[in-house]
Amino acid sequence: MSDFVIECHNLETAYAASLNRPILNGINCQIKRGEFVVLLGLNGAGKSTLLRSLVGLVPTVRGEIQINGVPITPRTLPKIRRDVGMLFQGGGLIRQLSALENVLCGRLGMRTTWQTLLGFPKSDRLLALDLLEKLGLRQLADQKTSQLSGGQQQRVAIARALIQSPQILLADEPITGLDVVASQQVMETLSELHTQQGMTIVAVLHDLGIAAKYAQRAIVLDAGRVVYEGLCDNLQTQFAKVYS
Ligand SMILES: Nc1ncnc2c1ncn2[C@@H]1O[C@H](COP(=O)(O)OP(=O)(O)OP(=O)(O)O)[C@@H](O)[C@H]1O
Image 1 (cartoon, rainbow, N blue to C red):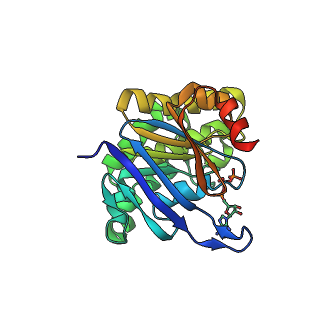
Image 2: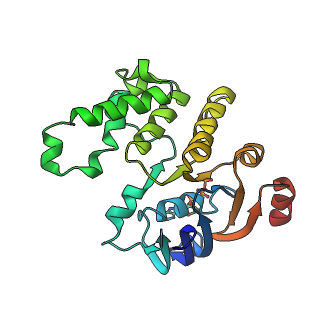
Image 3: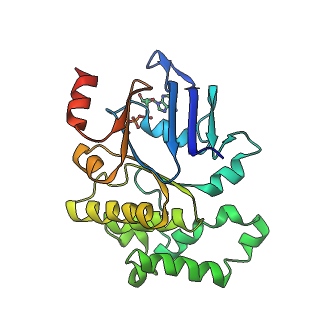
């Protein structure tokens, strides 16, 4: 079996008239099982589009994405989505639901519509509470997420992604808008998932210092292409080279 859990071969997405080119314009990259990779690039480089492509949310015009050696197709997508958890930019929580209910939403993809109508089984509720406990949020389980701080909301979003027991976690700007303490808590949580559970993590970040502290490898995008792929040493210099 290949060591790579994520492979993009000449990935091209739809043409954007505003950019005068495809949004992703021939992406080639490979990510190994258990790696912590940071995706970097200026605004509009295509980072979110790439992450969303990896869970089939963006149609591919050319090229291929393989997850665990399996190409993304309509037939393989449901299984791939169970293996790949996604933290969306801004958390994507339902504000009027409690932390616990939001985490349980992460189980919806595992259940049929009929099962959903019957409510979540006790085993799911216990699992959700256990995850909230691990993320230091057990006391806030019944609190509406609109009443939680940004850092707490982001950790609820992490718990929601984790309830499907993904092998791979994609995190789109998980610390944007958070203060220093909350950012550190969220990054430490991701780091523990990586070091203790061997989870493959791909995170979009804007802070080069934080990227270098937590990630093993960086992929830098510019105008829909990979322009640097390598260690996180000297990211400032790499960035300066790319954008000079
Ligand atoms: N559905 C769409 N239709 C047209 N253009 C789009 C669409 N989605 C994204 N784009 C454009 O594609 C480019 C890449 O967007 P994307 O959100 O992937 O960038 P990003 O690197 O994540 O940026 P940021 O750091 O600002 O979040 C942007 O110029 C954006 O305006």
